[in-house]
View 1: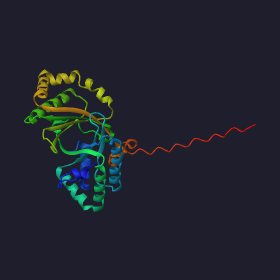
View 2: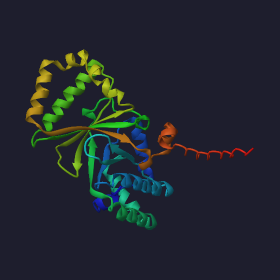
View 3: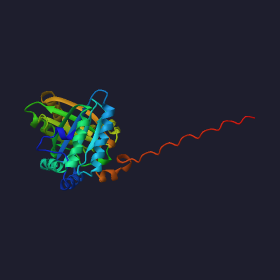
View 4: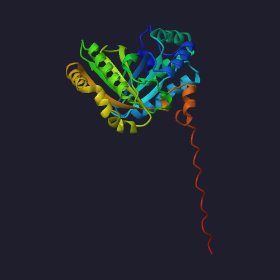
Length: 291
């Protein structure tokens, strides 16, 4: 998880203690206001080795009891890649991270060593900073620790169509509320690391069975709430305002995550499984005695 080399000098990674407490409170109320996502693509044939090495990052942070938590995920669809998520109360808290990292010379040296080794596995790594848009999100306050997947739709709108995107997503949210659709999604906009016209619609799921049920969930009541005019505007936006859109599934990976005690307590079997006991060697059969 090549954090250090990708973060601008004025910004950093790990939360200070006060920011951690605030971020944890925020997670109980809803998605973090600032979401930092690191995207890593391994070199061809290096994917298994890279994922195995990522465990070294998680162990290093855990051993240091570092005041930062992150969620590691692996793509089930699309290009093979890993995404790492960290939440912050504000950009100012993210700025404090580098200061804390710089103050701890011993830990900083370990991070540098991990980064150098990580570069042997990676062909590309990028970091993006996203801001939460609660006015476009629906029932987004869910216990992420009990989830297993993110279904993420990445939408890039054409220049000048940011307000158009907001208009459509407000309409979609209103239809969800009117129809009483019991699903959950958070909308984020990229503020650094790429085009400001880049949005993420993040749907947390406990099981992919929820994708099977999505059509029924958005059935007659939802379609009536959207209305014919709403559907027309939605199709119009897709044709006029969308540069690209792609949906992919990412599975949570405890082995490459460094999560809080609260997350572990929420589901210890998933986040901190006990090692399976080694299989006992089969008893040797005695050779039959000769008569």
